[in-house]
Image (cartoon, rainbow, N blue to C red; front, top):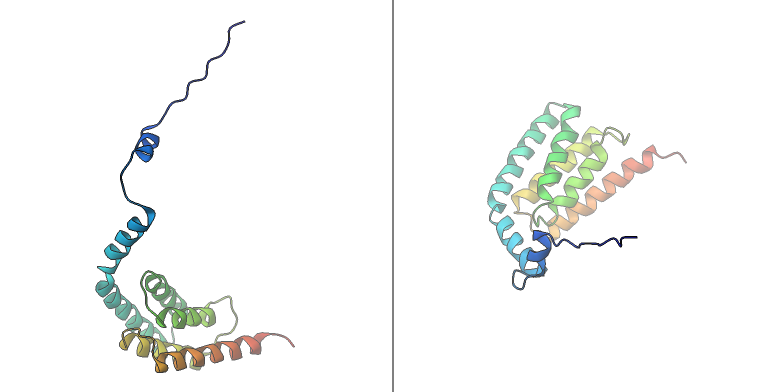
Length: 150
């Protein structure tokens, strides 16, 4: 009987990964952060444009557009350090989600105004922004408690 022979083929990728040199994971992450931060100003301008659309949808009470614009804000703000902006937008998404069943126009408007104030303050973590976030949490909890049976 003939004995089977097994051949181990080393792929090009395996050879490159085992070769000395290259970047460490920390170096690669730092380079990626630097590259991403070079787009921060453009992203902040894009956030302002989306927020203007959100404000217009809110003024016209175009309910379907609210969640869509809020989700777009959330997606973009998540790429950058935006301090209190991201949790404020997340809160808006929570109360404007069509499936959440907690819709309330005054609460939506309060969230949109708070988001504008936070964005205008360059997303800094300040006493005012913390107070705004605390208020948004209270508004969201009130809405969610109102819809729960009990």
